[in-house]
Image (cartoon, rainbow, N blue to C red; front, side):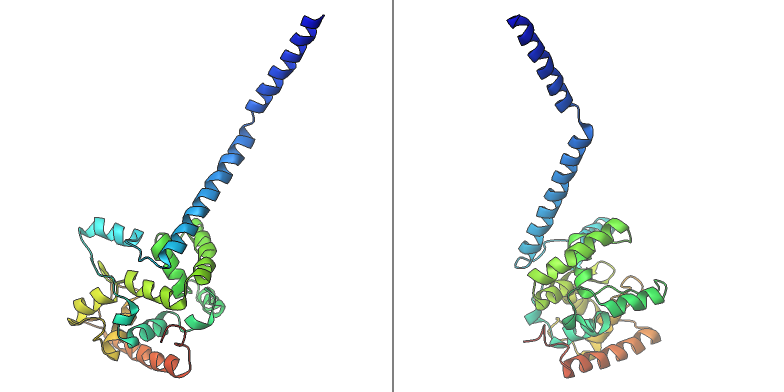
Length: 245
C-alpha cells in the first residue's frame, strides 16, 4: 500500500512538473519582459554616460561613413564656438528651446496642420534621434524618441543638449558638426564665424544634402537673414539664457 501511495505521489509530481515546464506564453512573457528591461537599462546607462562623455559615433555618422568611405567631423566644446552659432541654430530649429521640456506643442500642432510638410521636432528630440536611435519615420523609432526625450531633458542641461546637437548634426553631405562645417564652408574655426555665416549654416540644417552655405540660393539667403534676425531676438528677449553663460 505504501508503494502504491508513493507511486501515486510520484505520478502527481511528474504531472505537475510537466505542467510547469510546458507554459510557452508564460515563458514568452518572461523573456519579453527581460528584453524590455535590458533595453531600458542600456538606454538609461547611455543617457547618463553621454551627459558627461561625448558620444564617440552615431548611427547616422556610421551609416554615412560606410556609404561615403569617410566623413568630416571633430568635436568642439560649446565654449569654443562663437555664441552666435548656438543662437542661430536655436532660432532656426527650435526658438522655444529654453522654454519647453523636450516637446513643443505649438510646433507639433503646426506640423500636423501642414500635413507633415514641416517638422515639429525640437532640438532635444533631434539629439535623441541622432545619438540614440536612427533616421527615418517609423512608429518604433517615434515611440522610443518620445520615451527618451524627457529622460534626456531631466538628466542633461540645456547647454549640454545643444552642445551635443552642434557636434553630431549633419551640416553638409558627410560633414558633421559646427567645426567641420565652419572649415568646409568658410575656411575658419567655429569660434570665428560671423553672424551671417552662422545663419547660413543654420539654414542648411533641415536639408544638408541639398543645400549649401557656400553657394546659397536666393531662398537660402532669405532664410539666413530671417535666422539672423531670430538669433538677435532670442538673445534680447531671454530665450537664449538657458545655454549662454
